Length: 249
Image (cartoon, rainbow, N blue to C red; front, side, top):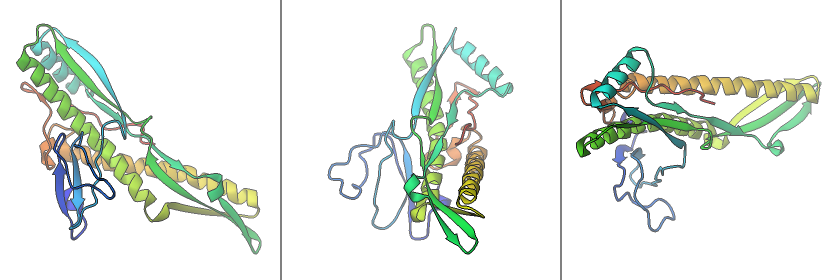
């Protein structure tokens, strides 16, 4: 977001389908962005484009109604019951090849060390949005339903982006370095494994917090316009309730 940009950079938004951006390093013929993404742009930008399918699996859940009124009433009722119309399950994973885990003896104790490199597991990161239909839809009805689905997806992609940004932050500077000591080499390795487990929980809790803050600002997508370029999710006069993410790691 704009208020998170480092000094010397400015916030810019590249919208879906826009031809595009200056090419990033070694890219000769950049295509168009397939979904909106904001960048903190330095004076000499090194662009990358966040492409569909790169960071998550998209699932469209059919939701068929008798008519528009039925859709609005159903969504209102589900919202009142705390049911969410779209969900995001960002999944962070770490890699720590055995070759990067070492143990060394110093005096009477052993120290085991490893470096975790975090990334979003695209095959396990699931974004689910409704595919809204009802009988005898007019072109205007279809456009309205698509607008809601697009707005829902844009909000959910924001949750995925939180995971992408956090993984990059954790892996900056060579990775997430952990160490533990023990009286024997095996005890040191066991203690390190416990630290990895604890770290995984910490990462999940922090990602939940960041996504919770995002939902607070956007009111779960109802006020997505609180962010630059955001579009509120609305069906006719109804507000669609959008989920907070689950399964962060």
